[in-house]
Length: 295
Picture 1 (spheres, helix red, strand yellow):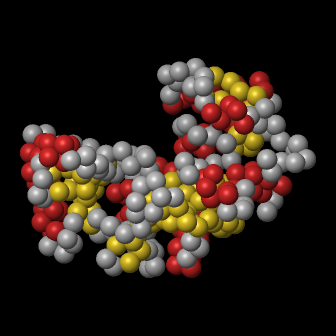
Picture 2 (cartoon, rainbow, N blue to C red):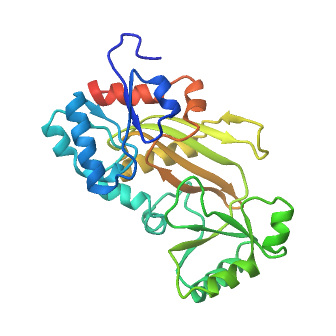
Picture 3 (cartoon, helix red, strand yellow):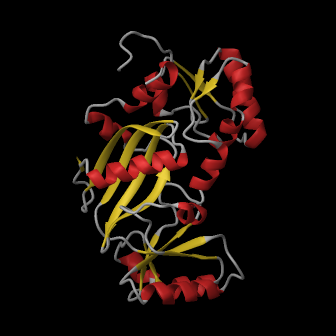
């Protein structure tokens, strides 16, 4: 919509033949299903070369594509990616990422890394002594998959029957973890029970160009509010600089008993970016235009 001069022709590819994004593109292509790693990278290189793509904004296998920027550049394609491959790997691993964060205005919630039931017991005991409620989530996940608030009173069956989403019974959880010798890296954390903020951003290799903070309602279905809090904007600026963030990315914060806390950095467009754009700035266009011709 912002490209009133028609400077850009959008080619969208997806494994989903009915992808809604195809409706906004000038041209669409269905990607072969099942391609991963180097096989997908080779397909992207061939596609960009065949279609004469000048700028590639990757979604799938973004870290691999980021590392292959020179290969794309050699055939005339510039890659617009949120960060370097090394940084993308870090951001996707919350256990490692949280340990690198130095953010005085919005530090991550208190957490412990656990990979077996003995570590879980120790982590739960230490954190529960200080915090009234805890939660658990995978170190590597997207869209909140695997996140649960730990309930000390109700069983998983009770929670299911009561329709309590994103909750898990402590006894059932511990019994399940004990049945496994070890498991993938999980984080036991202080649960932040206040408002959540989703901040959609445009960066220029570490410089924050634009940020729109959305405050989510505590009641589902009651919309969101644009809330440009100074502490959120400053924290986002510091994160962009520390991790060299570029293009469109998203930062999540949430309030707790001790104030604002950082949840994560999503090195991609968020699902709610359209709501941020309604506030005025067309973030995808700003990112593309700035990357192409300078900010």
